[in-house]
Amino acid sequence: MATASIQHLSQRIRQMEESATIKMAQMARDLAAQGHDVISLSLGEPDFDTPAHIKEAAKKALDEGYTKYTPVPGLVELRKAIQAKFSRDNGLEYGLNQIVVSNGAKQSIANICLSLLDEGDEVIILAPYWVSYSEIVKLAGGVPVLVSADIEKDYKASAEQIAAAITSRTRVLLFSSPCNPTGSVYLKEELKAIAEVIARHEGIYIISDEIYEYINFTGKHASIGAFEEVKDRTVTVNGFSKGFAMTGWRLGYIGAPEWIAEACSKIQGQFTSGATSFGQKAAAYALLADMTPTFEMREAFRQRRDMVIELLGKIPGMKVNRPQGAFYIFPDISSYFGKHADGITINTADDFCEYLLHNAHVAVVTGSAFGADNCFRISYAASEKELREAIRRIGEAVSKLQ
Image (tube, rainbow, N blue to C red):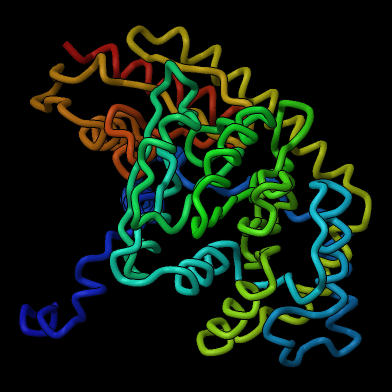
């Protein structure tokens, strides 16, 4: 693009970072197009197909003529199913006017931030965090304030750390559990302590991203919005992409205080309006139908997690914990910093990931994109064969570093 054209772009877009996961996936595709055998472990996408009964529900909806515009906050049928799901799984009671369906959970988070944030408002983001959080916050005029925890703490920030980060400008606490990129899961007692901190500060709201709820190996998912002291100040975000392998369907939703839900619907009405009609019909069916395929996917991910941890643990210098959810491993690779091979010196996680891509033909994502410069993310949403070969290649490449 010509320099003059770039200068005519808005400051907003010029200052925005590209999604690191999408960027790495494209780099992997480019390398594969050159004839290289690239194993991509970069995208957070289940490798399973959408369960057949959900696809059949979408086909049925198409045949019944569900091809028109939908109400901005979603079909009543889907919002009723979400209402039932919140009550059944999370102990959350929402009226239909407190539920908004969006074109993916990412849009849900953007809607919330645009509804709550004014210029200069601070958002405490628990790090490591999903790549888009900080950029969405900045796009809405907010200021990201990172509260971090390392691998020794299972990447889970404490209530005390959150309390210390609160200022007069704090407006929102934003986090995910189970977490992307770490797979960490906040337990009920940990969420209770955080809720008690937020409850002491009127005017601070919680955005709880629970998109990986069904990929949880602890036995029971906990929602921070279920605690009485913060239920009226929590927005619970969820969707269908991970637990139902419906990434391309682009369906997310929130349960929120009525005034926040109305604001999100107002914003969405100007940007995209409602999500696809036949997709919403299928999603409503998915929430109330047999969950066996979802639970089978979870167990497959658990087995892969155990295998990946075992294999990575055999690579000298690779520090790995045992995440309790999602489908990611987030190793600390700081022990390799300063080492070199083939004229390349590893000084950062970015260097490490580029080294793996070009020398092992394995695509992973740098931890710097998630607010953790010493780490990188492996998605184990891939076949066991691919995972074994990818980790073999990683071990071989790492062994060359001196």
